[in-house]
Length: 218
Image 1 (spheres, rainbow, N blue to C red):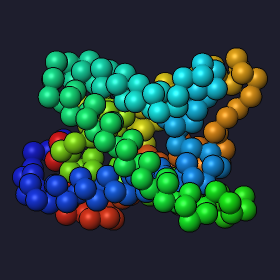
Image 2 (cartoon, rainbow, N blue to C red; image 1 turned 60 degrees about the horizontal axis):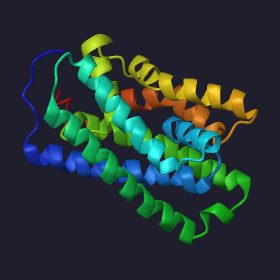
Image 3 (tube, rainbow, N blue to C red; image 1 turned 90 degrees about the horizontal axis):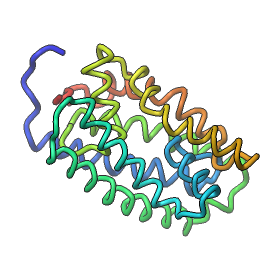
Image 4 (tube, rainbow, N blue to C red; image 1 turned 180 degrees about the vertical axis):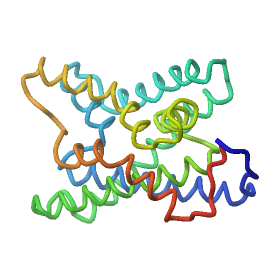
C-alpha cells in the first residue's frame, strides 16, 4: 500500500464512533428480525444449541480467538493491539444489546416474515458500511474486522472481498459441523447468506463512495 498522510485524529475518532454506531444498529436489526444472523453470530447460536453455553460467551470467544490469530498474522506480539481488540469486543456486545432491546421494544420481532427479512437485509448492508468506515479510521477494531484489515493489506493486495471470505472461514466450518451434529440448522437464513456473499463487496464500494476523504489509516 502506498504511503500517505493519515487523517486528522478528530476525523478518525468520528469515523470510529459512526462506524461503531452503525455496526451496532445493523447487528441489532439482524438479531431482532430473527431471519438469519451475521455469520459469527449464527455460528455462536449453533454452538449454543450444541453445548448449552450462552451465545454471548461464544460471540466473545470468537473475538478472543481472532485476536490471538491476528498476533500471528502481524508476525509479532502486540499487547496493546490485543488488549484494544478484547476491549472492543466487550464494549461492542453491550452496544448491540441496547439497540436489540430498542428494536424488540418497538415490535420488530412481531412483524411478518417479509418485513423482518427486509430489515435483516438492511441490517447486513449497514454492517458492511460500518466496517468500511471504522476500518478506515483504524483506531479500535473488533478482532474479526482487524483480521480482515490485516489480510486485505498485508496478504491480499487490498482485496476486501477475498479478505472477508477468509475471515469467515472458521465460523462457516463451525456452522457446518454443528449442523451435522445437531441434524438441524439454526440462525442461518437469507441474511446470513447475504452477509457471507456480499459484505466484502459492500466494504469495497463503501470505501469509494461513502466518506471517501476518510482514507485507510493503516
